Image 1 (tube, rainbow, N blue to C red):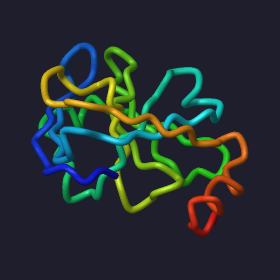
Image 2 (spheres, one colour):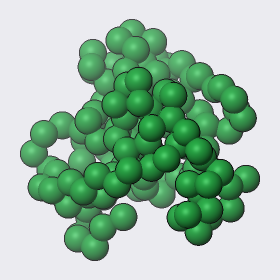
Image 3 (tube, helix red, strand yellow):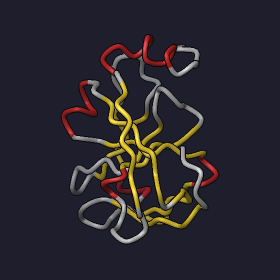
Length: 132
C-alpha cells in the first residue's frame, strides 16, 4: 500500500507469547475501519500478502473468533487478549497486521485511510473489489 522499499517489522501481543515479523514499507498506508470490532479496539490495518508475514512464536497461544459471515479469522492471544493480526474478510488471501502491535522504530511514516466497514459491501465496491 506504499511505494517505499520493504523493511522487516517485528511485533506481537502485549504479553509476548505471540510474536511475528512482517515485510512491508517503512512508510505505511493503513486502513482505519469503522466496523463494530475494529472501532472498539482502534485497529489500524496494515494488509500484506501472506508470504510477507511469518508467525515466529505463539501459535499454541492463539484463539480465533469469527462473526457474521465467518470469513474473517480474528486471532487473539489467549493470555493477554490482544489481536495483533488476522485474516480479513476484505482480503481473505492476505494478513492484516495491527500497526499498533509493531515494535517501535521501523515505521517511519503512516498514512491513515478511512474505511467504511459499517457499509462493507459499498466500501469494497468503492475500492473496485468484489464485495463477496
